[in-house]
Structures are given as C-alpha cells and as structure tokens.
Image (cartoon, rainbow, N blue to C red; front, side, top):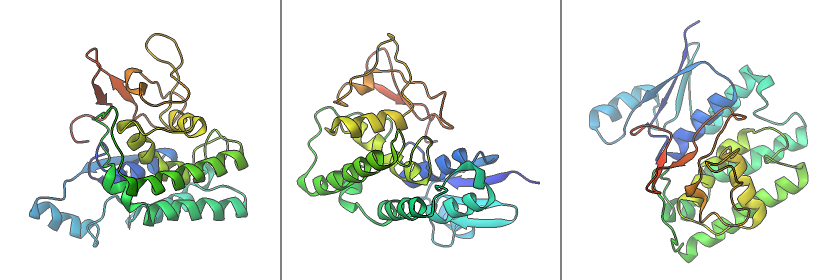
Length: 243
C-alpha cells in the first residue's frame, strides 16, 4: 500500500493547511507532505489537477482524492474510526459537526483582522471592533463545550475534529495577544501542548501576553506546533521555512 500524500500550503500561515495536517496526525495516518504555493500560475495549474477548486488541503490515499477539510475529516473518520475524530455519542457527533461547520463557513471578520502567522507576535495589538463579535462567539462555543463535556478538549479527554478546526484560532489569539477569559486561555494552552517551560514554572493562567516567552513541549499530543522563544525574546515556529 502506497503512502498517503497530503498536499498543503504553509502550516505557518495557512489555517486550512494546518487543519488538514492536524487531522491526519490525529488519525495516525502514514502520510507524506507535499508543499505548494498558490501564487505561481504553474503551481495553480498543478493544484487544479489535485483539487479542482484550487483548495488545499488535498489528501490522496489508496487511489482516492479528497479535498476540503471537513470532507477529509469525514473520510479519515471512516477509515480510522478508532482515532476518535468524531465523538462516539450521536448527539455529541452532531454538536461536533455543527461547531466545526460554523468554523468552516464563518468568522470572516476574524480571518481578516487576525491573519494566521505562527512566526509573529504583536504585543498590545488592537483588534478592530468588527472582529470582536467573532471572538466572543468562539469563546462562547469553547465555554459551552468545555463545561458540557468536561474538557480539557472541546469534547472531553482527547482531541477531535472540533479541536483541529479551532486550533488555528488559538494560534491567532496568541500571535495577536487577544485578551481571553481564564477558561479560554487554558484551552489555548491545552491545544498548544503546554507541559513545561524553560525555567520550570507554569505559564500565566489568565493572560496570553507573556505566552511567547515560554518554551512548550507537546509530548502528549499527536502534533507539535508550539511557539518557541529565542534568547532575544522573538518567537519562532517549529515549522521550518514556509512549511
């Protein structure tokens, strides 16, 4: 059986590429990453063959081609049901699909105001008012799920589709120093795999302002996309180059 191929753009700057990568990691799929850009005409022509809508991520596995993040998630759930990408309970699955679909199709103001960039940090960034409603809706979703299902992930004790969908939002909140309530801040630290910092002390509980000064370990998660601060205090991503 040939190895699966996941075609993505940058995991540092592309939220959909990161989501597709996270889903494959969560499903423990043996896959090869193929990185492409979308600006060059020849690359766009190549992408058209891989994904007729020019969208990434695009997964090719066992002769099948699947694009669109939610479609990839549903496919991975079918071939790897034990991975738990969707909850076992029917009502919980419906809830998970609903909030994942809401992220898939909504929050355009947030996307415009806070472009994803794992390699940047903007202390004191002023978020324009149009994005505040999106931020409030997202944290309301998190609060509901964490309260209803007990955390530390949105649907209980292990990450699922919903966590992959909202993980890039966590990186945005960190990059732009978005002020969060304590529960939402803790969820972001959970998604980023915070286990220890360079001086052995836990990171702050309520404010993301100083999070970039911590080195995080992700040894309990099937991914590693933590922020690591250099000695000069500037953040770098664990993804090299434009990966």
